[in-house]
Amino acid sequence: MKIAFSVLSVFSLVLAFDLKSSAQEKEQPIIFKIDTGNRAQVIENFGAAGCWFSEGIGKYWPEQKKEQIAEWLFSKSFDDKGNPKGIGLSAWRFNVGGGTAEQGDSSGIKDFRKRVESFQNPDGSYDWNKQAGYVWFVKKAKQYGVENLIAFSNTPPVQFTQNGRGFKTEKDYKSNLKPDQYGAYAGFLADVIKHFDTENLHFNYISPVNEPQWDWSNKPGQASQEGTSWQNEEIYKVTIALDSALTAQKLSSKIMLVEAGMLNYLYAGSGNANRQIQNFFGKDSKLKVRNLKNMSDFIGGHSYFTENGDSSLVQIRKNVADTARKYDVKFWQTEYSMLADGFREGTKGKRSAIDCALFLAKVIHNDLVVGNASAWQLWNSYEPGSPDFDTRYFLIALKPNEKHTDGDYFQTKGLWSFGNFSLFIRPGMQRLIVDRSDKITDLEAAQNVMFSAYVGDKGKVVAVAINYSTSEKHIKLDLVNAIKSSNLTKYITSALEGDNLKSYPVQKIKDEVILPARSVVTMVVE
Image (cartoon, rainbow, N blue to C red; front, side, top):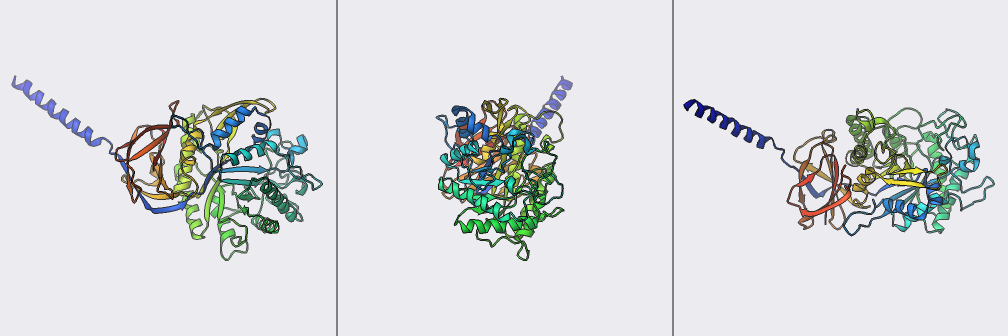
């Protein structure tokens, strides 16, 4: 009996110790201190492009189908259950074509869908009925109240190029524009802007060069799209010409540079299209464009190929932010999709839709928080593919017919994880510098909980949390100098079938917020 009592006592002590240890090991909620007086950059827009499939959809697809696609991209409305109808983009990128579609197969671009019409005919006259499908989406963006329209060009019209094509055939990393056609190209872009101004479709920005670092050369019949290289001196020359053309026609659109092919080229890199912040915004640079009448106050770069591993993801964006700050210029991230395999994160095989959606959210978060980006724009809004896996290139998956005159379309988890940012963080809101109780670094957060917060002019606070881990996480918000509100609303994107930016019941700010495993959660306080 004495022995039995001793065994029982030991068992009780062990059990009590285990329970105590378990309680101590239970994760405490991460407390995020959000001081609305501790501000960073102003957010100007979230956007996407309509290449390459806007022409077929906008021109030929049935009305109901293309209207639904437009609603998903542009709507800021909610249904009767409080769920968003769309992701409320605040920028839309329109490709000003180079005339390869008119050339047909002789253009040398193998995929007919990636050949683009030009408004200007070879004889210099204009046909404003061209690019009808692309223009349909511009008009829809305007109707939905998209705040920023951006026109961008991948190549000058083919009649202005050295080889008569919309891509390079010589690998020399120089512009395909004829040396005596800079004024003509600038005049063409100004004419396009002026025409759409008369149609009440004002383009806030015009981008004359795209990814100037790449050679864009190929054999005729093997080219994948329109494109040309540009050296820094050539970019400067075309910018001066465009500034003069916009001024001559009394246009208010701003010039947008430089759409760098990788973020590294904004501050470093080799070749003749490198160190573009220093070259175009350095006060002593001979290529300085800052003081041009029609120049914007930011520089644009693309996040492609800079996310292979969290260390690179964070460090490259820190370098961009540091250099932009030193040269007093804002940074916009103006194109991204998962072109490289960084999104696989060391895995093999197909990546699920939620894995791709979370990786997209991680890149957006780091561009905003570490890179200090004032705007964030995706590449293609829609492309052929599956909505269930490897949704690396698009927000909306297409299954078009052979001629692309009709087809099926599907929303993806990436559409809604982008919407966790784009729908709620409106132009003019300001990012807040947040303090977190766990004190982990940006690098450590990339596999844990990433968190950012933003404030509007009426005190509205929006926070976006990305739970990258495979376990549920608990957080608490500590709002300082904020509006008097006791409630918050959550919108969640997760692997669950219905969690497509789904609205969840209002809860008290003082209570813990539960972040489901592998999810993006937007919290709104107003």
